[in-house]
Amino acid sequence: MKTKLRAAVAVAFAVSSLGGCASIIDGTTQEITVVSNPTGANCVFYRQDMPIGTVTNTPGMLTVKRRKYDITVKCDKPGYSQASYLNHSGTTAMIAGNIAADLILTAGISSIVDSANGADNRYDPVVNITMMPLITTAAAPIAAIPVADVTPIAQTAGQAASNSPCTHDQQVQAKIARENGYTGGPKCD
Image (cartoon, rainbow, N blue to C red; front, side):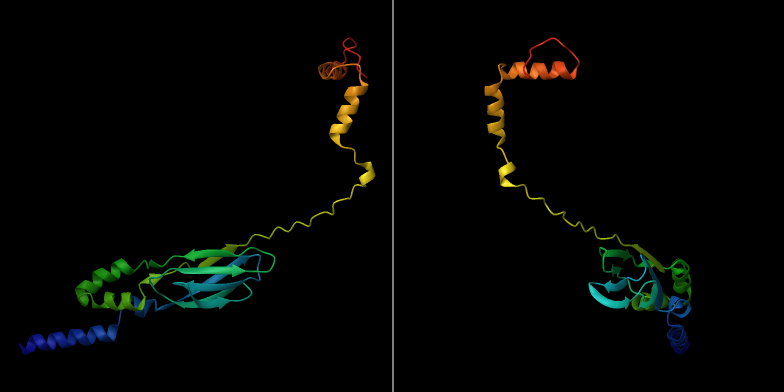
């Protein structure tokens, strides 16, 4: 019984001194670089709708804690529309090997530690964001038309109809004939 107790204490000591494999090798933080087009933007990092850091005057870098939650990067610059990037939290490449070794060496405790402190998660290390310029249209001034020059369309059409010896259909036929170069047809000028 004492031998089993000593072995359990030795394993517990080894596990507590190891922490987590990914925690030791990769750490619990990560640098994320933001590059914007155009440069000079201000970008705020959000995790679970809470701001966790800012990069001013891109390109720039921010160190974030690794977590299982995604990070949204929102960038603003005067004269440009806001742009955002969703940086997904994924697992590190070494996690599968860690889990296999962890089950053998520490009965899974190391993986639990890595998962609890976020060391087994990773974000995209470089975020590229393109911002679109705002389209501003300056309205051209509308030229005022003097009231004396305005003649109602109905009045003009009525005058033409009353001064012409032809009906409306004859006027249309005469116009088509002139446009096509025909010399025959009604003379409604």
